[in-house]
Structure formats: C-alpha cells, structure tokens
Image (cartoon, rainbow, N blue to C red; front, side, top):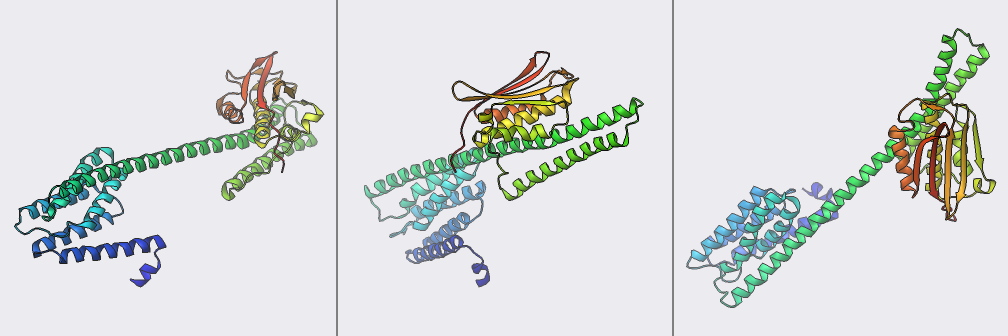
Length: 383
C-alpha cells in the first residue's frame, strides 16, 4: 500500500487525502442520524456517490442508478416518522454536483440529457430529508440549490465546448502537419528521383539507339545518377533529423542562396539566372526564402518530367512596386502532360506560397511553360 502511494503524483495524493476526508465526513454524518435506518441510508448514499465519482470514466447507467437511489432514499426519509434533523448529506450533494458537470463533459449529449435531469432532481430534493428545515427556509435552500445546479450545468457545457475546441484545434494542427510532411516528402523525393529517372532514361536512349557510349561518357552519366541518389538520401536524412529532434533545418539567408541550391543540382537543360546583384544578397524572411526555393525546385522538377524538348530554362527574380518579389521560372519545352506542373507538386507549392502571403500562377507562355510566384519582400529580422 505504501509503495503504491509512493508511486502516485502529488495531485493523486491530494485527491486520495480529500477522498479519505470526505468518507470520514460521511461516516460522521451517518453516526449523527437519529435512527439506524437513516444513518445507514446516509452512509450508503454518501459512499456510493464518492465511489462513482472516483470512477475514471462516467457511465450513464451507473450515474442514473445513483441518482435514482438518492431520490428513493429522500422519499423514504420523508415517509419515516423520525427523519433527519441536522444534516441531509453534504458530501453527497457535492459529489452529485461534480458528477453532473462530468456527465455533461464526458457523456454524449443524447445520454447526458437523460442523466443530468435525474441528478438535478436528486440534489434539489436533498434538503427535504431534514424535517427541521421549515418554510420559508426550506424554500430558500431549494432555490439556492436550483440556481447552483444551473451554474454547474453551464460550467459543464462551457468545459465541454472548451474541450471540443481544443480537440478541433489539435486536429487542425495535425492536418497542417500532415500537409507539411506531404509537401516535404514530395519535394525531397520527387526532385532527386526525377533527376535519377531522367539520367537513367538518357543512358537507355543512348544504348537503344545503337550508339555505344564511351567509358568516359557512361561513367559521367552513372556519376550523375549516383550524385542524385546521394542527394536524395541526404535530403531524406535531413528531414528525418528534423522530425526526430524537432530542430529546424539550416536556414537560407539570401535570395541568391535560395535559388542557387536547386539550380546547382539541376541535371536538365542549361539554366540562366537573372537576379539583380542587390536583390540576390538581400537578407529576406525565412518563410519567403523557403517559398522561393521550393518554387524554383518544383518548377525545375516539372521541366524534367513534362517539358519535352526543352533546351533552355530561365530563372528570374525582380522587385515589384509595393514591396513585392516576383520569381519566374520559364522553359521553351513542349508539355508532355495535360497537367504540366500539376498534381500534388503544384498543389503543395500553391499552399506554400499562400502560407507565405503570396500568389502562384502557372501555365503555357511563349511556346513553353511559366511559373510565377509573387511574394511579399519581407526583410529578415535582425539577429
């Protein structure tokens, strides 16, 4: 027993002490009754109330049965010639009120609607057990208990709504986290795996055309595949590290860094970057740089997947009036899909840009494909 108490938390020990104290008060009330029958009734009703209150979950049938027992004992005391003279069950009334609030919070509305009225009647009727309470004192006590129960009901409803809001907020947070993970997985996997697929297709195309590649050319192609695979593993390890340690990934500090990383890993057609020198070295807010990075990375990935015959790619960034940043990625290829740049990649990209306070558009332009992101030109906060 002592070992079990030693494993309890301070809150559990406090509740245990309060429970023992309440049980002692119930015993004292039962001993102060005038007859054995009324004393036994007080003892049974009080201890049953404490036992049901101590249950980890509220059960509608058990609580309803307790309320019926309490009401039945109240009617029995009123029928006896010698009722209760100095108490009507203080601990019982507190326990029943607590159970009322718990029933509203924990039970389904269809069940709490049936249980709460029984508890309400049981509590309001308790003062009638004491024959020494004459009118108008009895009426005043019943009125006070009635208003008190209304407050308990309102408190239970408020706590239930509070819990529901907390649950809804948790579900929204989980949904946002799942979407963020889905975007990250798509960005990490699709970008590098698409590069691997494109380079593998180049090797197969060269071989199937009857042109035996030289050892140097074949080694260069395989080295590109190996590099893309290593980058995919590194990106995946970085993401797993963030998920396991809850630590943010290393942040990019300038627009030039946000663009240079995906451009440097691109294995498709030559990429031309057009960024003003001052803008390229500007320190922007992390969420803006992250959005620009993913816009460029996803656009380049889609060029490998969909832009057949593309020979040139341009990445351009410039400032717009009103403190806005425009990032444009264009290619001169012919789309091989009706949803070029679409699918989950474009959906996730739109979500990222929207979250950063910007807008994203994508579609055919000048015989190729263009992705345009307009974001707020938010500077980084001083460290």
